Image (cartoon, rainbow, N blue to C red; front, side, top):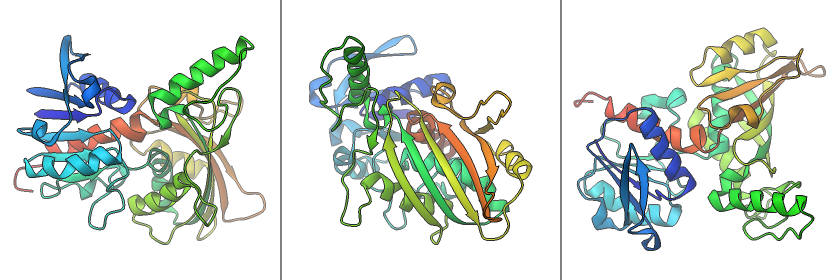
Length: 336
């Protein structure tokens, strides 16, 4: 395969390169593209040094797959030309996620939507991807009516610059030096704050609205009631979420939920009450699985149930999901 990565110098682009190497994706060419200021620099890949080219339409010729990870602006500018040149486009921005007729694929959940005819695949919001990985096996067996989600989102969701800022602020704080925000709107080290996306007239911020709309689309559950509160916490990578579920009927038992989650691909149950060991970023960082646990029935509502999850935002929440779509598409028979 001939694969191009737009945004190769960013956090998600670098993670895609790492995953392509780990999973031994067969390549005849890996073309790295980024902004003009990065052109001519090199990045290591499988023992080689690959030179970065400027991301422009003519640089996308003769590629089988183009993975876009540079934000909505470049995606809107480059997705069309890449498709016109014959490539399948897998886009990590929000540009096309809610377009009618464009599937929003998490392969473990709705991989049946990957077809030869479809040449554009947005990758969903990272928080929504992690959420649906936990909800889907439960919802298939015990239909869910309502979900209340609180998120604890890491710096990686805001990119490499935010991760660097958290490290710099932490060092400054410990050295009793001034903590000056540059990327985030508030001090990040030893602090938390409402997610740094714009709040609309209803009081919802952009991240909360994305999670609500995209989870519904991925799960093919347009009537699912979803109430979301998104918070930034001073963690480098991997998001965590606490989830309260209201079922249409009586809630399943803890053992039933535990078995459903344990059997679902890409999910690992972490639910050790004796040692107070439940899903947390220190365990999910740099991993491919979504950790799910802290299973509890609601003592005041026979339809209510609680759980907790954690997953690496850069991997399953972005880069890994993109590569999984690529793998699934490449594996389709030519006639499909």
